[in-house]
Each structure stands twice: as C-alpha cells, then as structure tokens.
Length: 215
Image (tube, rainbow, N blue to C red):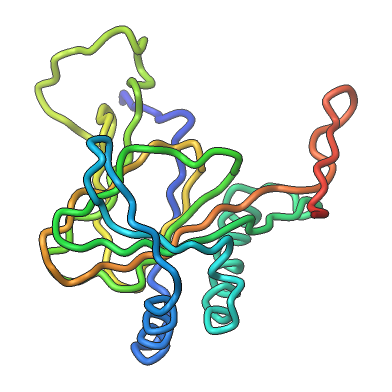
C-alpha cells in the first residue's frame, strides 16, 4: 500500500498554561504601568505598542510565569528535539505587546536567536484569528515554481494559521516567518514574546565552537 512520509517537519510547540485569572490580572496590571512605545507600520501609521524594557520576564511580578516558560522551553528543546542537556538554553530577552483595534504585527522572524515564543496573556473575543506562519516556498519543489493547487492541505500549504487563546504558550524556531493579523476590537490584546539562545560547547572536531553566556 502506497504511503507518503513527510521529511524535515518544522516543530511548533503549544500548551495551555495553568495561570490563574488573578495572576494574569496582576501581570497585566503591572505591565500596563510600565513605559510603552508606539509602534508604526510601513506607512508610518501607529500600530500597537510594545514595552521599553529589555527582559520583562525578569521582573519580579512575572517570576512565576518566567519559570513556567523556562520549563516548557527546556521540555521542547531537550525532551522533544533531543538537544543535548550538556548545552544550556537560556532566555536572552522578552517584551510585551499591546494591540487595539486594527493593530497588527508585520511579517518577520527573530534574528540573533535560536528559539522564540509567545505567551498570550489576554486574548479578547474578536481580537484576531491567531498567528500566521509562512514559508517562502514549498519543500517539495523549487521556490521558483508556484503550482496551481486543487486543494490546500497540511502537506502543500505555504501559510498556516494557528488559532490562539488566553493562557496559551507557543514555542517555535526563531527563523520561522510569522505575523499577527489585525485586531477587530477596541479591547486590548496582550502578549509576552521572548527569545532563547543555546550556550556551551557546540559540535565537535573541526566544527567545535564554544558559545558563552557571560555578559
């Protein structure tokens, strides 16, 4: 019987965190009173806000959330991807995003990072369908070809919508292109995004490199 095997899939990790409504409310109240910067889109129009801090998860009111995210990232990298535990996976930075009506996040990837993710602190109804992941071209033919398709499936899609909700944690490779569609409500949606890097002696022989986390 014929079978098709999918080679080299891109792993996306997600889980619902057990963060109480009270704790989420405290986190949201805390970040609301920090310094926010207005973002702009390619037309220089106001487009949401982000926090003017280097690592918001390092702030004490978010310490429990930070530990939970660390544990999930280690599970993703070490338990699922089987990256050696001799290597250290450590958060390099984190920030919060706040979107109102018509605010969106442009198509991008995360530079100078290995793994990234987002925690959805508050996703109101009608605040957008989720996060969109995108490939520049299919894996099954050259990027120069764009074949007509009778049906878009998980096997041939170039764009994938991941629906999200409050308290969801999403982890993914930093180089994966993604964007967030516009919010459709005046009620703000809050998310906390972050990057992680891998440190230690990577490789062996002539390709050995030592990456230090000392700052």
